[in-house]
Structures are given as structure tokens and as C-alpha cells.
Image 1 (cartoon, rainbow, N blue to C red):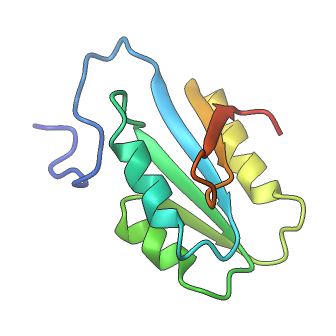
Image 2 (cartoon, one colour; image 1 turned 135 degrees about the vertical axis):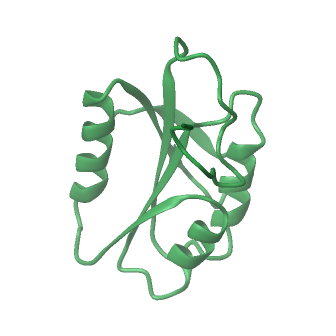
Length: 118
């Protein structure tokens, strides 16, 4: 029996289990107009992430809906002024052996992804 009967359309293809798992964390606030390009760009990389997590905080637009529609897992929050939820998600992934990168500057032409450092 297969481990997963169905996979998301954007999910990374199955590869040998010896490669490190990779996740990208995107803290976002009212990024509805830009988040889809950032997520799609990550899925188009040669080494696609296994997981893209968008942590939205106090969004008054449809950032969460757009992110989910583009294959990201979304954690909506309210009042998380110090990005505590994003920190918990990242720390949990790191503890599970996943390499985590944080994407910043989703609104610029040159988004930056770096190793998880808060």
C-alpha cells in the first residue's frame, strides 16, 4: 500500500530517502498581491521544497487563501507581534530534521531565502 494515496499537484516528486528534507517558511502580512509569485517561484526551483509554510498575521486581505491555492500550508494568526507561531513551526521542523529556510522580502524582485535564523 502506498504511503500517500494522493499528492498535492505542487508537491516535490518522490526521491530517495537519503536527501535532506527542505521546508521554506514565509511570514506574511497582507501579501495577497505578491505571495503567489513567491510560492510559484519556490515550486519552480531545481530542488523544490518538500513543504512551503506561510504564517499569516493579522491579514485583512486574502493572503491565506491565495497561499493555500498555490500549494502552501497556511497557519493564520492574530496578534502574534513577535512571530512566535512562525518560530514554533520552524523550530518543530528543525527538530524533526528538516532544513528550514525563511523567505523575506516577498514584495521585491529579489526575494531572499536564508537558513532559519530569527
